[in-house]
Length: 404
Image 1 (spheres, rainbow, N blue to C red):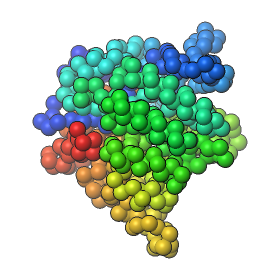
Image 2 (image 1 turned 90 degrees about the vertical axis):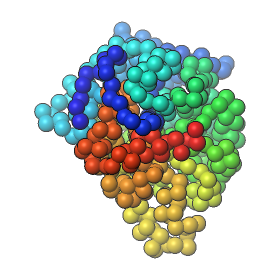
Image 3 (image 1 turned 180 degrees about the vertical axis):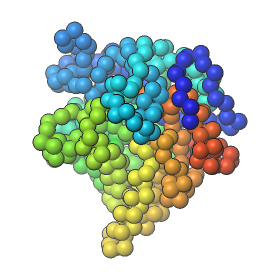
Image 4 (image 1 turned 45 degrees about the vertical axis):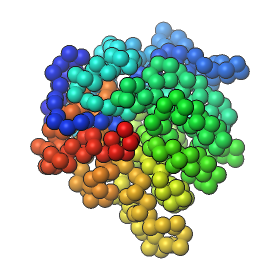
């Protein structure tokens, strides 16, 4: 694949079939978490000047999860692609690799984004937040506060982007399952405003008795409503709280920083949150209790799926009586995966089937693809997929999953 420096007016690759990108991102505005915060919650999440730089403060503690939370200067789209393709032969740091650029309207404005999509030859996108992924992990001891903060953010998100903009930009309201009634109420609020999908963070949720899986029977009213609504749930890579495990091994007290090089944390935790999340959905029986639920794993890669299937089959061979159905039936019916662009596809096709594989570019993040449709050429020329199969991956599967 050729990597070119992104320019807003560049000539983008064309593909002769509809393209539905399952992973675009927006950059949040400075009041994204505060515009609708109710009285009594002011100051829990805010931006502040620290030593001459604007920083995100969570409970008055500086977070460096995103180095520049104003997003006035960001990493250029696709500028770290070679790094994530495991071609960092010079051993450069992440900061040495990415190229900074001034933010452009396409990052923050839905109409500018639509015009860009036209130039990119992309018909539809799922549109995810960026900075919001640090919220839930910071309030694992406060289920009520978590849902209050999430609702305030969702109100901002609806103001700025809407949840279904012209049938092409499907922005994901965040749903937190710490309190089931609150999750159902938030889902109803989002559905009333046109949401065609929602975002649920991979990992345990806050609970009054400590963290727990979102797939236990106590959360069934939420999953029942998801099944009734007929919308898929997106599980995008996030801060799932797994940094604590790496900290225990390393004797450290570090915050997860996705754009910094931490050897042990990166290697040991790369796929663990999504693996545990999918295994929980199967082993705790949610996918069997609600066979109409569909879950899409986004920006978590796909090489882990074979290991998940192997582990589930091993468990089924030993304890079939504890499964509500054969785990492969759950996986191949309910789980869709958007692999990293640099991964081989055939092992994933063999594991879950071609019809459950989604295309994602992660635009405009630096680890993604600067020219998203370029992946169609890569899939045909480098991965050897026939054109009909590429068309399924590039858009057909996503249109069927979304029902739009």
